[in-house]
Every structure is written in C-alpha cells, then in structure tokens.
Length: 408
Ligand SMILES: Cc1cc2nc3c(=O)[nH]c(=O)nc-3n(C[C@H](O)[C@H](O)[C@H](O)COP(=O)(O)OP(=O)(O)OC[C@H]3O[C@@H](n4cnc5c(N)ncnc54)[C@H](O)[C@@H]3O)c2cc1C
Image (spheres, helix red, strand yellow):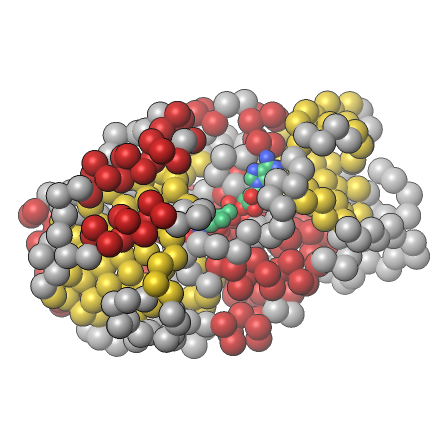
C-alpha cells in the first residue's frame, strides 16, 4: 500500500453508502477518491428512513443534529379505496415501524447533501465520470475511467447502487444477483394542489397503489405510483418513452387523482423509475474489489431499510479495513460481522407480499382491516431487524503526517 496513508481507495457512487464510507475511511487514514456518474450529488427521491443502528452511525459522524432538524413531522397516513373514500387512518410510525424520538424520516436529498458536506473537504470527488474498466494485479487495481483517465488504487469499492457498474465488472451480470420482487415504481415531485399538510395519502386497488406525501406545508408533494407486474425487460426500463407507456397502460382506467398523478409523472423532468428488487450475493468482495449498500445487498424500498443498510454497511466496511492490514482479511471480517443484519432486514419483505400493494380484493380488505385495528399511537416495542447489530466502537482517528487531500 502507498506510503503516507493506510492506502488509496476508489469509491464508485456518491449517494449514501459512498460518502459515508469515504468519511470513515478518511478518518482511519486512507486516501479516498469518489467517482460519481452524475454532475453532482443527486438529491431527489422520496423521503427515506434512518433507523435503529444507522442512527448510531449518524451520531458517530457528528451529523445526527442536522438530520434530527430535518426529521419530517408526519401526523397521519390516510389509506383510500379505489374511489377515493377513506379505508383507514393511522399514525405513520404504526405503518413504518419506527420509534418516535429516535428513528428519523428525512428528505433523501437532505441526507445526501449532509453526507457530502461532511466529507467534501477531505476526499477527492470526481463528478460526471465512472469506471469503465478494472484490471487487478498483485499490488492494486488499474482503473480506466469513461473520461479516458487511467489511475491505480490499492482498493476499489462499489457504492453505485442497485444497478452497480462495479458489481458488473468484478462479479458478472446483474441478473445473477437481482431478485425481482414483482413490482415496479415511479416517483416524482408535483405541485401540492391537494391541500395536503404534514400527511400522506395512500390509494389502493388490487395490484396498484399511489401515494401523495406532503412534507410539512411545502408547495410540492412527493408522488409515488407502484404496481404488480411481470419483470420488465431492460429495454423498457432504460427508455423514458416505454416507461411512460407502461404507466399509462397500467393506471389508464383508474379514478380519484390518478390521472393528475400520471400526468405529473409524464411531465416531470427526472422521475425516478425502477423495479422493486433486492440484491443477493454469495460474497461481497472479490480480490481487491468490495461492494457496499444497495450494490451489495439492496433490500428494496418496501423494507424502508436501504439507507440504513448503506450507512451501517459503510461503517462496518471501514471498521474492518481499519482493523486489518490485509484487505482479504478485512473484507471477510466486514462480511462476517454484517451479513446477519443484512439478511434479517432483507427478509422483511419477500416476493409478491407487499402490504403496500395487495394484489387481490380479499388481500386488500384484509390489509385494511389490519390497519383499522392498529392504534393511532406508535408502537413502543423494539424492532429487532432495525437494531439487530451493535456497532463496534469507532477506532481512534489515524495520526496522519501527510495525506494527500485533493479538492475538485
Ligand atoms: C436519484 C435517486 C433517487 C432515489 N429515490 C429513492 C426513493 O424515492 N425511494 C427509495 O426507497 N430509494 C430511492 N433511491 C435509492 C436509495 O437512495 C438507496 O436505496 C439507498 O439509500 C442505498 O444507497 P446507496 O448509496 O447504496 O445507493 P444509491 O442511493 O442508489 O446511490 C448510488 C449512487 O451511485 C451513482 N452511480 C450509479 N452508477 C454509477 C457509475 N457507473 N459510476 C459512478 N456512479 C454511479 C448514482 O448516481 C448514485 O449517486 C434513490 C436513489 C437515487 C440515486
């Protein structure tokens, strides 16, 4: 490894897992470069949850107060029938299983921006580029970037999400690891012409759901459309036109506010569309390349645990690299310490079983019955999956005489 630092690490992806990993690796004396294919940190998306063990990671990074300040105070979730009539009203924590005063729900963009701000002065960020090729040899990994640049690093970590390019290069095609759970979803922001405040509406008909989420009294709401469907081809997923067509076909006959939401989805500049899928891999590392977050073990948005697994995984990987000089031992230790936690969280949902999208009228009525019997107060008992891992204490920060720090 290079002198002057514990070694050089290239992290692919600057969303949640990437900057969190960069933060801890820098603290432990590594020299980190992060490459992100977008022109900057992408800040869109539906509000996300930071729960259980992940709250401890945020605390360790010193960003918990900022996240607490951004916590979304949602007062109720109203479930609607196909005609817009009310099926049930519940407290949000009763639906997502968080603990009031501890777990957080925050705009995704707030989390990505806070994480980026925590590391931007200590890590080299290269935006608008990505890894094109990796060649591993005895002493490192030679990386060719899409821009044509060529560099070498001691280690490479893929934090580049569900459709990770790093995973494809080092472990093979996505279809070996992606488990499609039977649903697709699309998300965009749209004007709050519904008069919603501090609340969410969830509309259902068998096999389809729509949600409108008003964060505070904002002028926009987050809209979500999700539906049961056979697995769409890569061609459908890649092209905006075919995605639009799919949404129009699936929701074309629906009432309530669905036509307005579909229209907003079609005209949004950058709607987020994906399948509801998990990543399952027999191993999270191969030689000098490792994976973290969704790239290695996406749990799907239906678990609400994607960001929490990304934060916890980043902490555990950095801890293992700080503890072991040899990367093979470190990667094995990361996996041994984290896999049980990951498995438990991924198991919160399985194929075709989403409570958000019951696929038959009977299942929908049974779901609504369960919702009506929930108390309006949040549950106070623990949730083993969210808290099933106790973090090792942060190691002392490395004493660095000379570590290269580059800024873009
Ligand atoms: C714009 C956006 C919106 C999202 N909205 C939602 C949402 O509404 N609800 C939800 O549940 N989850 C959403 N997600 C996913 C959610 O952020 C993750 O499930 C979770 O937080 C795990 O984070 P991660 O850092 O592992 O992966 P991600 O958050 O997916 O981040 C991966 C990062 O890698 C970058 N990247 C991808 N390919 C390359 C490449 N080849 N080279 C370099 N960089 C690359 C991406 O641009 C992204 O910044 C969204 C992700 C993004 C990027």
